[in-house]
Length: 194
Picture 1 (cartoon, helix red, strand yellow):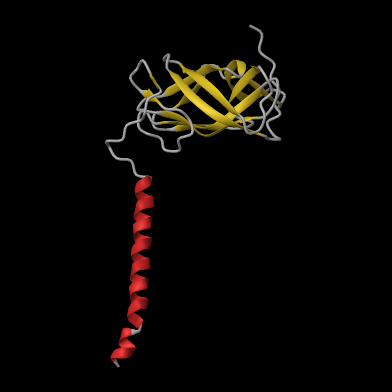
Picture 2 (cartoon, rainbow, N blue to C red):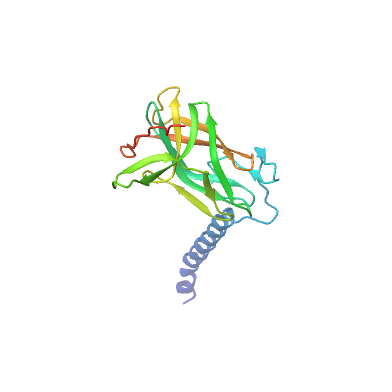
C-alpha cells in the first residue's frame, strides 16, 4: 500500500510545479503592463507649458505625454497621409496645427468635409485637431488625418517617416511612423485659394 501511495507523488509534485510556474509567468506578464507612480517618461522635448512629449512607437501612454499609437503613413508619391490614434496623456487639451518632416515640403492637418452637392472634399482642418485632456483623436482614411504635401521622394512600404508636429501653444511632438502599402485613401486635395 505504501508503494501505491508513493507513485502519485512525482505526478503531484510536477503538477504543483507547473501550476506555480504558470502563476509566476502570469504575474510577471501582468506586472509588465503596470505603471507605478514613480514612472517618468524619458523626454525628447519639453513643452513651454512643462508637459513632456514622448516619441511614437510606445503603446503605453505615460502621464504628461502625447503619442501617436498604431501610427502609419500610406506609401505613395507626391503627397500622402498619416493615420493612427493620437492619445493625450496630459491634463489639458492639445491642438495640433501642422508640422514639418524631412520627407515633405509641408505637413498639414486635414479632414474630409461633405459639400452641398453631397460630394466629399479634403480640406485643411481650420484651427487644427484638438485632442481632449486624457482623451484621444482618431486619424483615419476618409476622416481627419495628417497630410504630407510635396513629398521629396516616393515613400515605399517598410520605410519610416519622421514628423515634428506643432501645437497651438508652441510645443512640438516628435513622431516616427512606418510606411505601409494601402489601396484606399485615394482622396485628392486642391489647396484653397489664399
